Image (cartoon, rainbow, N blue to C red; front, side, top):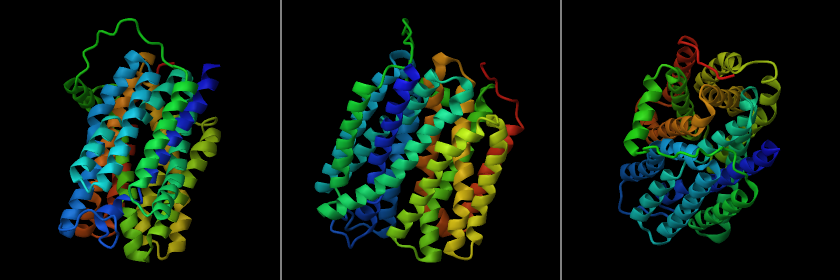
Length: 408
């Protein structure tokens, strides 16, 4: 009964959160790198400085989430998922309003502060994963983690379209951020009124949770005996796939002359395939195969198909290749998270998912900040070859290390 009451609100929480995030995606390049736009903020800065500022703001939120996610995850083990999720959503909504005002005031400092604050509260998906682990049997976790992937995918399909439309209709780059903040308030109401608490809160809360402890936990993720190969594999996988997503816009514009509109179509189709994979294909496959059996195939498949990207002769072939990238990617995301979740006890789900979210934030913060420079220095093909090798190393690390312990 609890599972039925919690899964749908958790799905809508992630969906609303990702729509709000997606709404700002088409706006950031305009305000930082398009001098012809009336919303451009960086007059007087060189092109190099513009890209450094844009990359810095992008990386800042990821770095702050890297620090905060393990702390928030562990706090959710102590005080409950619902309370921590509500706090994160509230802070994220406030940060979006700050960013909107920063654009109106042409204040770079306010923009940086806004992204730092957003990063500190950026543990929503990690806490949602912990909530799903609370109410799901180990054998069903990959399937139900797929719901998060569906929410993320739909958010990336709908968010940029809504954000671009709002900016066009209002003539203001700040309005999508205000709309995202309002969506955050709606999200908070969904959690407050429809999401039950999924975690049994311990009576004793005498835990010393500090930033140093959180960083130590992250270090332990790479050096500990039980989970290090899982965390390391997932981190390498995220580095590789984020190189793919961060470099593809530049690649498609430079090689095939795509516009911002056609780029949105490409990433929308990518998101659609991930939604199909995690919403439908994953549910069928997990009935027949274990997480490890799926990952043994899916990681190799996504690595090899990404490495084929630079060799596609036309845009038609790019679109033909797309499902062969998106389907194994969708399978890999959910099954790695499920393996990590199954390898820790119920009272450690928040901490484990928090560390996983922290590593994800680090990968997704660092790579976008350097992908453009790497492509400029080493060519359009390099990021795809590098991404594929990272994912193949992740596969090797996962299957040629000591097998993970599963709590049955």
